Figure 1 (tube, rainbow, N blue to C red):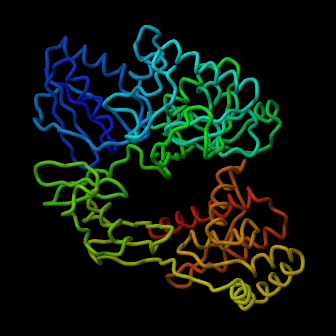
Figure 2 (figure 1 turned 135 degrees about the vertical axis):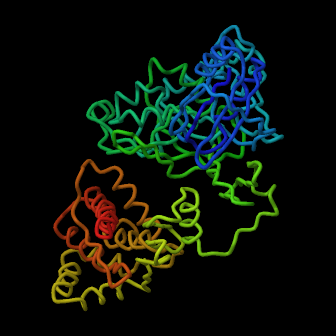
Figure 3 (figure 1 turned 90 degrees about the vertical axis):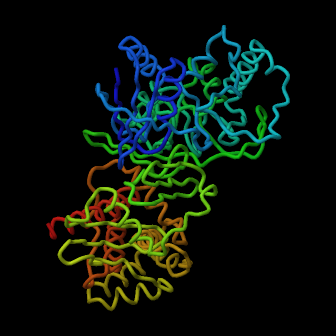
Length: 525
């Protein structure tokens, strides 16, 4: 009997679990990849397949990169099986978590425990100077000591495999929040089903969640939203096991030295994820490389997909996944980034013979809206090319647009002279381009910062924390085939004069741009 598992996913993480379980039961297994799909074939008797499926269901974790998983009986089989996978840092898998919480297991409360799939790449010099950690009962007492310190003093500094933090029960002005479990998230935040799935996934991403009434009553804070995560390494996992009956949320603040587990590891960037509030609860990773390998693209001769750390190199026979440095022969064809990205997607989804509209938006590279048609070829439909030397130039350009613009600049300089002067003194030197650069300009004129990068980040932060479903309409208008940034800046100034708050106004800036993109599609369609 052969069963075929069909996954729509990115990366090789789940392959590892399929292969491990098959080897432990001594079943034949093969892998095949086609476009965005991964096919896993397992061969054995009906009883063996049932045993395999049961064990896999128990051990296979949720992943933010898993879009779907189906299985069917088949007669085909693939002989290909990867020999090795790239090394990477990954939070504890379900098997290791169960072992460290089993009092009869030798790894009971062992913070260093990991397997061939999960765990963190430790520096060779890594040492934890504490003989207590050699005995499982003493390890438990060590965690009890940390927990008592946190309960008594309200804070304690602890080293983790993702950095050193001051853990505090005072949630004011913290970098992020650690929830001890999903019930704590449900009690204090407005979350959806997709949020819970992402938080509980093996990658343990940070997710921006809005606080609810119970949070505000319990902690006396009006902060609208925080980045929240569940424990993402054994140290935090076992500490939360000790405090979960007394403390539900812990504030995290980065520190240089820790009182407990004061060791150094090279940490990967933690994953930030946003979960869209739709029926599908689509999970979108915003930042972070842990577990993320480029999607396999269809093989047309030799091709490659590359990101910051890893490469996917394919031939007609197979695909290799490894660190980019291990593929010195890979040389990217020199094309503008927006063209490379667009054609990569067109090729991957077999869109060469269809009329296609592509939105290509970067923070620091050229952004374009491209229209591709089999009849007319590629058209660079809309560009986002604008740059200013100072706000003096911007205000003068707005005043020169029409009488309304002139009056707006005059009123703004008089009624919000603080913001006007902040903008006039702002530093506009940056490598940012396009819409992100525009949002930085808007953030400066709204008083969020005196530089492009921080101001743009504030726009993003405030918009994602806004307690609204509709914001003020910000004008995004064209000058022929180029976005004119002055309209967006001047409407933002008008709403600031009208007293619209930071969160609502930022939401309007982002929401209106989304509507602008949708209107382009509707018009062309």
